[in-house]
Amino acid sequence: MKKLVVLTGAGISAESGLKTFRDSDGLWEGYNIEDVATPEAWQRNPALVQQFYNERRKNVMDAKPNAAHYALAKLEAKYDVTIITQNIDDLHERAGSTNVVHLHGIITRSQSSVNPELTYPIEGWEIGMDEVCELGSPLRAHVVWFGEAVPMIETAARICGRAEIFMLIGSSLAVYPAAGLIGYVNRDVPRYVIDPKIPDINVRGPVIKIQEKATVGVVALVDELLKE
Image (tube, rainbow, N blue to C red; front, side, top):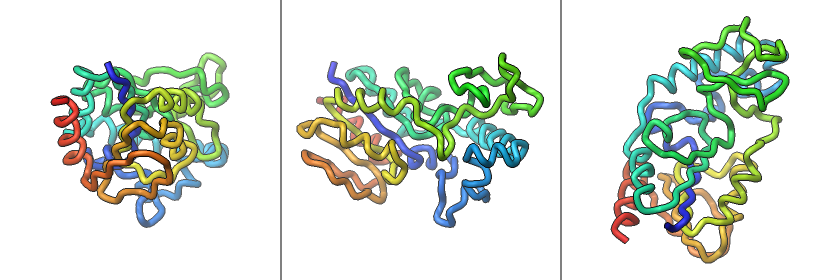
């Protein structure tokens, strides 16, 4: 089986009704990023941060995978597929994809606020301010905030280096270090880029641009790849 690596960004989840991380007004669901998505925000006002991610978690649980998510899951019938996602939702898994690397964590789990390696499943959609990890530290959403390390980035880079086909879906390549992953793909590997607004890509080798939203472009590309 050929190794097919997919990097997905906010654009694929937007079609399931989830707001992109930073909209044109610079806000995320009406909040300044600095007030809800940094370690300093947690220090200043943990209750606000907890409430924000509880609301985002409920949105994720109410959302449903779209045609692009389901199409990517179908690729596993013919390819060795790894999905690397910048998104914190679980829509890829719910669509049936079995090998998903979450660069920025996953909102359906909680983590210790002192040791990010201690993670736990969440019952329902809320984390209470009185819930603590085994070390006695408050639980928070299992997501990577601005200013925090991205623990899975080296793993993701190695996966990209082994790709025989690469797809970039719904990402503006604006958030680092994730945006640099396409540079680890070998230059002779075909790279498909699917987005209504194709980002600037400065790499050597073949880049096939599909200027469509994910539910259109991914579905068409998957159909082609499954015929080969």
